[in-house]
Length: 291
Picture 1 (cartoon, helix red, strand yellow):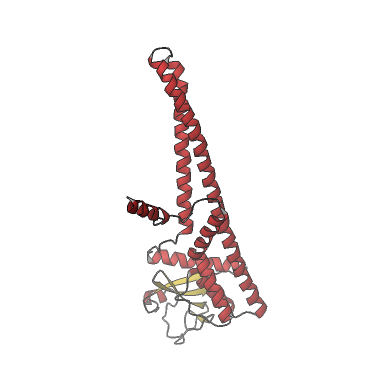
Picture 2 (spheres, helix red, strand yellow; picture 1 turned 120 degrees about the horizontal axis):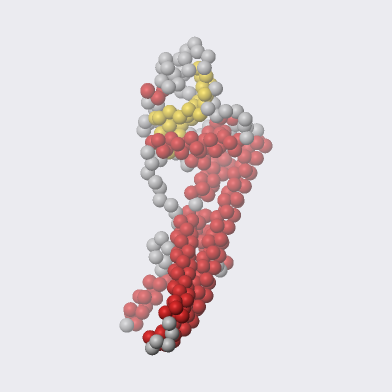
């Protein structure tokens, strides 16, 4: 018996899989959940990688973006488009990324505090309603004796039963609300699984990332992004190349330079700017700008 109790106590102390280490409004719990959420935040991880990369490379050297996460990809493409930049500009860009990280941490902390507070309010409402329900249950038990003996009519009893049902529904509603908040908190705190996407979904994500970075740059120029499919070796498929270079690529150098501008045909006037390579969810792309 003692061994059973010991095992039961141990089981209670270990959080279940996909559960929370705590679920209350104490400062310690809020700090624990916030730290866990930050550690598992995909956005924070990408921002940290971007900051580390920026400090190491100083934004002055082209970096192959094929194995970098979405936000890092966006930032690198942005720098490839605009060039190395002056020192003051680099400091400003780095400060902006640090600011975004700070804002992300504050947002996560605020979301966790709100969820915990709302969950506590739901639990308090549940307990308060449970007290009313218990009192009403006692009243119903007494009155039903008189009802069964014929001293009270059904009309007299109906409001009493309805109030009991009302309290029961309110208890269930509060419990459901608290459970929903708990699941929302788990989704915020726990790491999210990687979703396998199709090439089209991966392409859409790359475009979204680049557009976001372009808007952050504050430029009034049109992006005119062109995304070409590439194989496992990051070589563009011939059918894709013909979308930009209808006469083929014999007039191009063997290796395109980042930010380099090239004509689409040997004697043509239309030009494109080479941005770089990108990988998303295992799919490879090569990026250009139409000028």
